Image 1 (cartoon, rainbow, N blue to C red):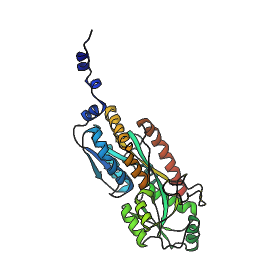
Image 2 (image 1 turned 60 degrees about the horizontal axis):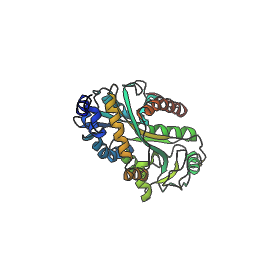
Image 3 (image 1 turned 45 degrees about the horizontal axis):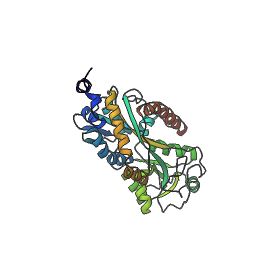
Image 4 (image 1 turned 45 degrees about the vertical axis):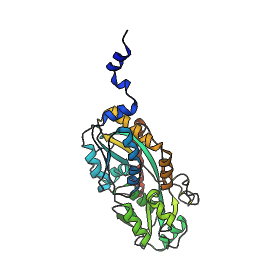
Length: 321
């Protein structure tokens, strides 16, 4: 009969607790690449979750903000990184929309990454400067039609989900508004609050503090249902645009070929962070809806999302660059 000690020695992975096994897989700090500047929804989410994720994997997670080109620069950097679990990427709906904006892509989002897991859904909103004389989406559309070419609508950089959401709004509402793009959410929100632009299409999360302070006003949430903490803000469907539904999400991916043990360990790290009651409450307070997924669920979701955002780009009349 094989003794218990000999059995454990022959299968050390079975003898180690899950957290100890995860910590053995990561031998140095993990670089977490984001395609956005600091202050946006993705950045806010990541900086809330990483302290709890670090505790799971036993190594620091270093956030690396690389904004620009709709996530092409950051995505390419991760796609070409060593598939050893020490470089990961914040995949977002902007990556799903990018193929609709660019003729040439430096990576294939369905082929060049290993899915780890989804983290948070983020509703989009249509917001206005409080001094604009409108109280609803219907009134905004009417004003824009009465003043063709006189209203500016802002989004962050060309090629991401917010920008496509804005172009889809202009097309579906059939309004002549000038789109103005910004490098980051803070820059966009500053311009909206000071009146440089009158309207913005943005994620709810970075706007939430400014909504509560009265610096900006929300007209509609572009989601199937009203946001839990904003029961008085109607949906786009309730505001006369039933087909205008735009939602974002974020997830973690590794470079293609990353071993399964690292994938499973980081998926556990996501679930651990999202299970913290204070984190869940804070995400909802900030405008996010936490919902973890398995690697397989994310892997099946990505090609569906690329197709859906491509269809939205066609409806918006987007021309590839």
